[in-house]
Amino acid sequence: MAMTADLPVLEQTATPRAAPARWSRHARPALGLVVPVVIALGWELVVGLGYSNGRLVPPPSKVFETIVALAKSGELSRHILATLWRVGAGFALGVIAGTIMGAISGYWDFAKRVLDPTVQALRAIPSLAWVPLFVLWLGIFETSKIALIAVGVFFPIYLGVMGAILSVDRKIVEVGRVFRLSGPAMIRRILLPAVLPAYVVALRVGLGLGWMFVVAAELIGASEGLGYLLLDGQQLGKPAQILAAIVIFAILGKLTDWLIEVTAAPLLRWQDAFGARGGQ
Amino acid sequence: MLALKEVGKTYPNGVHALERFSAEISPGEIIAIIGGSGCGKSTLLRAIAGLDRASTGSVTLDNAVISSPHAKIGIIFQEPRLLPWLSVADNIGFGLADLPADVRRERVAAALARVGLADKAAAWPRELSGGQAQRVAIARALVPQPEVLLLDEPFSALDAFTRRDLQDHLLDLWADTRPTLILVTHDVDEAVVLADRVLVMRPRPGRLFEQITINLARPRDRKSELFDTFKRRVLTALDRSLDRSVRDVTDKSSAGEAMWW
Image 1 (tube, each protein chain N blue to C red):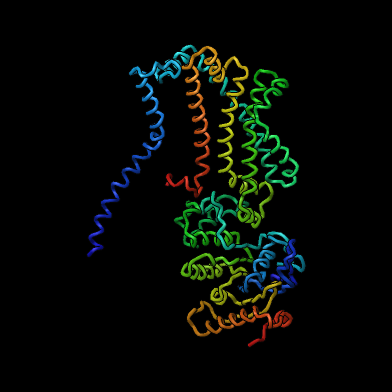
Image 2: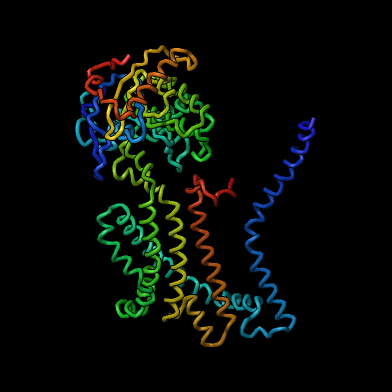
């Protein structure tokens, strides 16, 4: 008797459960916007009601105005493109070098013994310490900036790739051996897919550092770029311009990171991970 | 024929895992290797698979010396070891990369149907139960049609019902192409259900202690008295193998049948 009484209850709970699931697919990205929007509106209100003059911390509307003004004059796109080009070139170089070196050190024990201590020693140097040397060697223009960014990107990629290869499950590699895979086939069919999740993380960390170092590079001496906008804003006392540059940095950083995430997602659908639970 | 001649293995750390193991195994025979822990069962299996090289002696299959993994020898491990980034179907077809895609697809589909997982072709390994995953592993090992299939405690991680189910299923699949099966196990019941011959090993160093031929017709009734008799024989041999006061009889057993009964 009790069992038959339970049945309709079960059916009832099934329908309202499906609805929030559908709703949350759209709501989930929006959830991340709640905190910044509340803070922005709050500050706007504080300035609007006259509790602060907003001179040193301009309200969002002022920052937005600055961005629009910069965009209209065509300056904004010039600065963004300059910065994007530097990050892109430095990131690409760092990724290529880090991947190759990391793969060699991870795959070949002898190379690891020879190379890794030196690389680790170089990693211990704060990357900004290279700046004077790069400027002397490569000049104050693009090359030294790109080199600095590449150095920043290199280390997390190198470490990520090497660590990922070293931690590939021996039992899975043995499956490759049982099926008599050749060296290249072992790399292509076992090692590459096995290290992919860690590689994507390394790329994202590397890109984050790339954005960090582009600011350092552009603060040193540049006539364009978002870092230049920052410095210009400081020297001429334009906090709205500094905040505008910071907001654009945040947007670009998030956007490029999202790009990596989205590009890699179809390749990582197989993962049986805690973080994948929402995808089911 | 698979011939093991005085196979021995000493690991680089000095552990003497296996000593002078000899056996001749005919095509299509089902062998169970059983023994206490540390008796070199897995070491022996890995030497036959060509995954680890024997320190002394030789493994030959039809007169070809096995020193690295061989196309005619397949292996199933204790864990399914499926590649998590490949679908179930791609896992099964993993060893068929050299075949044209349509032939591969056909053989994979047939294997999937044969192990009763046709509806799981597109699933990820993480979506399978333990028993299903081990079925996929069995299909993956069988689909290149090996002459010898090695099984290293393949069902030990499964619950009793699934284990029994898979044992029957394995015999069923074996009947298709009748490869030689060499099964390492610590389950006496499993050894007697599956094997034509049970090789009992004794530890430190691992060596052959006794051979017991199970001349019971298949399918075997696990509840029959004769089945129990064979189980008792294997159990007695296992007990004796662990009793240090019992001396080795390797000379006797390698000469042919053990005459303990």
